[in-house]
Amino acid sequence: MTKMYRNLYYIHGPRVLRSVVEKPTGHKAVVYIPNKFEKFGDNVFTSLYCATSLVIYTSPLVLPLALRRGWFTPDGGILVFKFLTGLGLIGLFSLISRTIGRLQNPHYSTFIDVLANAHKEYTPKSKAVLERFDFQFKSWPVDFDVKEIEEVKARKVLEGSRSGSMLSVTDLLAKMLTNTVGMSLVYPGSMGVMGLLLETPLLEGRTKLHLEYNGTRSKIRTRDNNDIDTMFVNQSTKCNGNILVICCEGNAGFYEIGIMSTPLAIGYSTLGWNHPGFSGSTGSPYPEQERNAADAVMQFAIHKLQFKPENIIVMGWSIGGYTASWLAMNYPEIKGLVLDATFDSLEPLAIPRMPKFMAGIVKHAVNNYINLNVGEQLSKYSGPVTIVRRLRDEMISTSQLELDTNRGNHLLVKMLETRYPNLVCSEIRSSLLTILSQPIQSIDIELKEQEQFYHEYISENRSSFPCLIGEKMTEDEKTLMLLYLVSFYSILPLNLFLFFLPLILLYLVSFILFSL
Image (cartoon, rainbow, N blue to C red; front, side):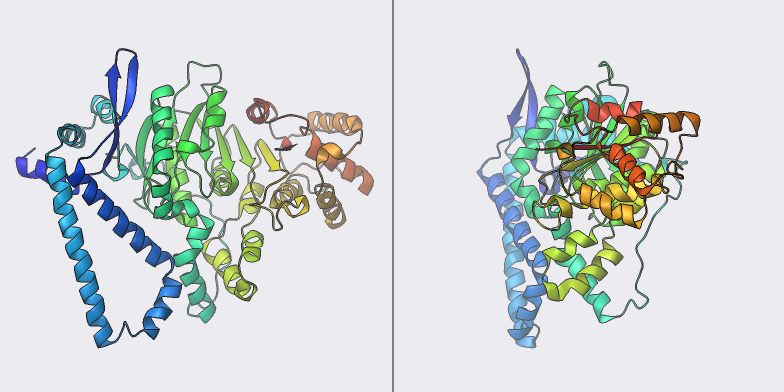
């Protein structure tokens, strides 16, 4: 590496957050402390980044204001040019200050040597040395590129209906809404400001995964050239360690502080990943980029981590149910699917949260640009499923804390309609939703007869779906059978059973309800 090339790292290199040092008592994480010149430059760049992000997020409000104040006139253009020139000079001065600070910091020089060596020759040994540092993920070498896998093929995609005229006023407004505040509202974790506010908790989470669980961080490149930040914890020495749980986080969730802790606590090998645009991951969480990211993570698990799909459980939390159900639809041989606090469709949740006069635009934007059709994707998967419904979930309910408006109810009903078409008709569907509007534990009905009949039917007939049980049943008998299918596991708390059920009960619908 030439001296000139090395010096460039001091100019555009990543910001270091912490390092791991060896102590007599074991490894210890030490926070990286920049000197005053480097800190000044970092603070200015952070402030400029936050200001830019704020302008982008509020652009629908800023642009009309700019027009009224004449910013797009010749005189206004000169004023804007002077303003941007001033910002440019501030940025240049900050860059020089940060570079000088880094040149004077021996710890940063050590890091540069390690990073440059990893980029020059990326081996397990150089990666192990690189993992002693936590820094901006943009400079992390690529561990896995899905485009290098010959077996990658086109996947199933269930798209929403597209508008016939892409030049309509509604479509233009919907597209503007989606590309400005829309994605930030649906996926607040993609906001750069959110990443900055959570930088310390995320750093602490990664440090814990690395030091306590010996987690391995990797960069996965998708087919659309996004880089996805992942963390893998290998627990193969434990009783459940030969099973991998892939965790798909919520709309403000990160693997560092998300649902990875649940499977880790009970001994499963676990792979967490951040949505496109979240923390170290690049891109934006549009449905196509989400699908490509999830597919790359699955390919990484199969080809790099050497897990067979039959030994992989996919777990989705909240909006993570979209990518989780998409993976299940495209990899039907997986061990099981767990959907926790997940909805059936985004549209019923989005419209009530926006002003009424925007209902048409919101509906168009959701159906054409953010169509998270979890229910439809789940209906295409016939493998083991566990659905967890929260009793006090304000995020996936159209009315806060009202159980009858929880869209998890509709997700369950849609799955039952697909798997048991003879049990669910329009009248019974209405009755089933009424039943689901209250905690199942409060329903005192003996269902042992339905349990026995169901298992006898499954043993005598094929166990695949759609299951034709219910052909000769009355409506009351169908309702009781559906109630059994819904409440079969309602007495179980959220513990080991959450993960054992998909493994034990092949092709059985299981619906777990519990109170927080």
